[in-house]
Length: 143
Picture 1: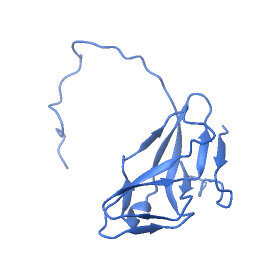
Picture 2: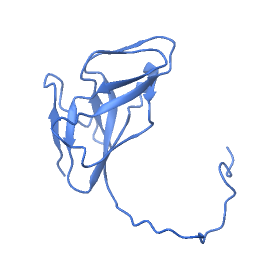
Picture 3: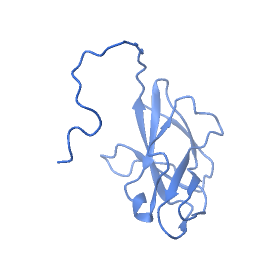
Picture 4: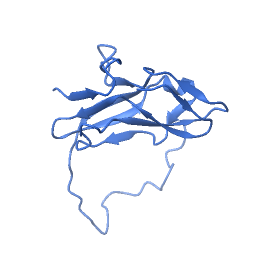
């Protein structure tokens, strides 16, 4: 499968899988940016992506991004197939959990993209489900 990627700043490298077994490819900050303490900041990721019909993207943090004190503001980001225009640059919303500002350099790899197949379902409303109740939130314990 092929996807089309537009880079906004061609001085930054084209995204690539970093190992032969990688499931996702990395994206980097397009600009130098400062993330204020305890605040959300939107970081532009330098690419717009056009996917084949029937696919979507999961945008997530790289495992090393948390070492900076940053986590994604919305956990995972879902990028729908139709967010694919010429100026639809992917962005990464992060929260700074530290007590100091965090400086991100242009080109710092922060996020990663996982391409997945989209399965559309039919929603069927019922008045009763056939399975046995498990007892609610957290019923399996912690160990």
